[in-house]
Amino acid sequence: SAAEKGGHEYFMLKEIEEQPEALANTLRGHFESGRIILDEQRISDQDLRDVDKVFVVACGSAYHSGLVAKYAIEHWTRLPVEVELASEFRYRDPVLDRDTLVVAVSQSGETADTLEAVRHAREQKARVLAVCNTNGAQIPRESDAVLYTHAGPEIGVASTKAFLAQIAANYLVGLALAQARGTKYPDEVAREFAELEAMPAAVQKVLSTVEQVRDLGRRIADSKAILFLGRHVGFPVALEGALKLKELAYMHAEGFAAGELKHGPIALIEDGLPVVVVMPSPKGRAVLHSKLVSNISEIQARGARTIVIAEEGDETVRPFADELIEVPAVPTLLQPLVSTVPLQVLAAEIARARGYDVDKPRNLAKSVTVE
Ligand code: G6P
Picture 1 (cartoon, rainbow, N blue to C red):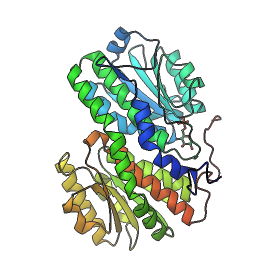
Picture 2 (cartoon, rainbow, N blue to C red):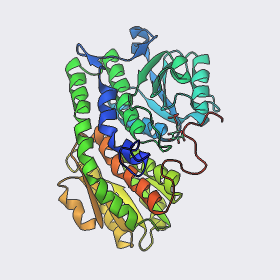
Picture 3 (cartoon, rainbow, N blue to C red):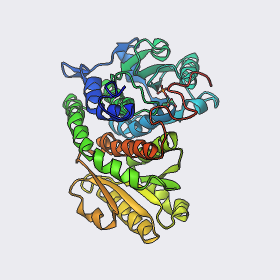
């Protein structure tokens, strides 16, 4: 009913609007007496300290949350992090031993491929840490440590609030490792946590763009395809934006690393093709920012309709943006938490405008429990 959907036409929009709360609930209680704490830890502090390599394994949007987290975990811990689709990981003899930490990310905790990846990792003596949104699900039950996301039940098949919560939880895992390894001083861990704690308010601010983005969605709903470009942490955001559109609007959509533009994607640009560009902060990543500005001017010159997600006050990008969606300034590593939100709204609204069921897209299941 409309009441269940919080007055919205579809659950997904309600869940998009619940994201500030999902983030706040996921962070709550994880920084006590100056330390990051997990929910369950059946692995010793010494073993956590001895970790020398990290894998993140997951499927779908959860996999994208891992791609985002890689930037932060490597930066904070100086550990190599590989992010892999669970369905690939377990069939390729990955190099695992007792000093490997495998982070299994799953909203449901029941995804068959992720569960089998967990089992494979444990057979090889790796330690497994689950990031999960469902209390007592199979994946956390079979893991050595657990960090629960508290996004609440997610009804929409396409993940939204669980995805943002996964990014935050993965970051907590990174901080827990940095703290165990001493690669960050306690005051630095505290500062990173405080920055995470400021994110619910930042996401709340992005929600003020919802009507602008819905209107844009209606205007581009009959496009044949949409491309997404991003760099650094904006690259996995581009992948997630494209996945959302495929899932919901049944449109051809692809996410690209903007630096690869000249190695293929630019050949796809034609008159009127919408291209969504996720901009880095002009202050935080000035070099990447200027490279992306030149990418946008190139695609615009070739006829693309540029839709630019940029930090508020970023004037340099304005001349090249046919549509400008402004997000608040946040630290670079946290940017995906704000820049993903307009892409979720865009996909949902395009799907609705095309007459599809936003909450129950065809052929898809909320949790894929068979391989
Ligand atoms: C399905 C859902 C996606 C989700 C993926 C992984 O494909 O439609 O939204 O990202 O499964 O699910 P999990 O429960 O493991 O996070």
